[in-house]
Length: 102
Image 1 (tube, rainbow, N blue to C red):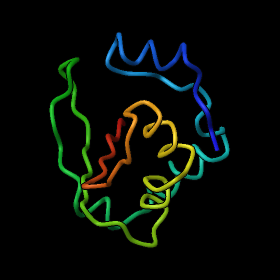
Image 2: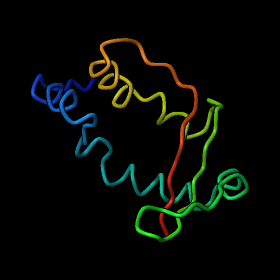
Image 3: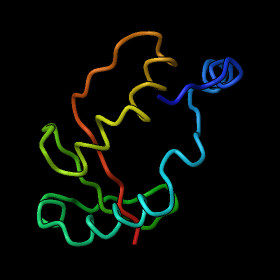
Image 4: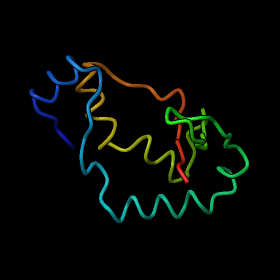
């Protein structure tokens, strides 16, 4: 279980966000990138949106938790546990979103 520090909680409370470095290792990120690039589900359901820099990004959004790698990430203790610490309550998955930069 990943534990965040009291300093990180304070930073989240102050800034409204917290960036956790190395939440996923390089091999995990590479695997997710390869799976994303090969996923028919993402290719079929993603839509294009203009990003803050004026370019375009692909957005994939789903409300389903399945047996796929994306749902596994959304349920991963390394993600869920820190969120529960920061929010000081249980978290529930209503949807998960991926922003795909090219």
